[in-house]
Length: 232
Image (cartoon, rainbow, N blue to C red; front, top):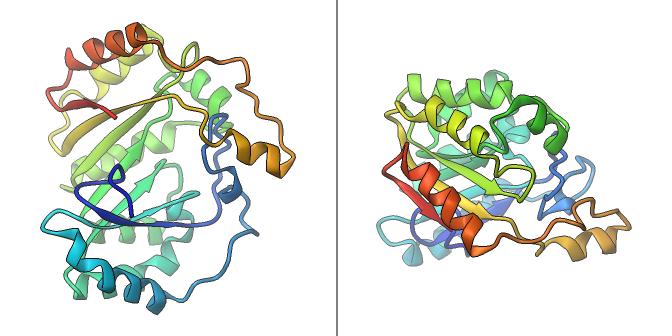
C-alpha cells in the first residue's frame, strides 16, 4: 500500500527489469530482467479488488519497478481487467522504452508518473547509462495525446541540482497543459543496504543527502516555472 505513488492510497505493483542503471536506484533488485517471481494477472486483480474499499475516490493501482513499460505487452490485458473493476491505473515510468505495446499501454492508463532523471543529456547519461531523448519524446506524446502526467525529479547534490539544468527543464515543460504536478524527490539512501546484500558497489557513497537550503533553492527554482510543484 503506497501513499507517494500517485493520488490517494494505492496498491503498488513492482515489476522486474529496467534498461536504466540509475546510480541512486532504490530498488536495484528489480533491475535484472531474469529476476523476480512470475505472478498471474488474476492474482493482481484479486488483490486490487480486495483492497478497492481503501482506495476511495482517488486511489487505485500503480505499476512501478523496475521499468513497467518493459512488460507493456503483458500489462495490457491486466489494465483492461482492472478498468472493468473501476480501478484507477498509474504507470511510474522513466519513459525510456518505446514500442507499439508501450504506446497502447499509455493510451489506456489514467495517469503517468514520468521520472525525468536529468534534463542535461550528458549528465543524464552519466547518471543512468542511457539517453534522455526517448523520455522527452514520451512526455511530448503524453501532451499531444491528452494523457495527464506528473513529472518526478530526484534532487541529487552535485548531479541533478544544477540551476542551469533545472531552468532548462522548466523552460521545456512550462507550457505543457497535461502536466498536473511536479514532484521534487529529495535524494535518499534507503536502498543502499540492498546493494550490500547483492554484493554491488553503491557508487554514490560519497554523496550527502540534501540540506534544507538545497531543497529550498530547488523549490524556488521550480516554482518560477510551475504552479503545481510539491516537495515529497
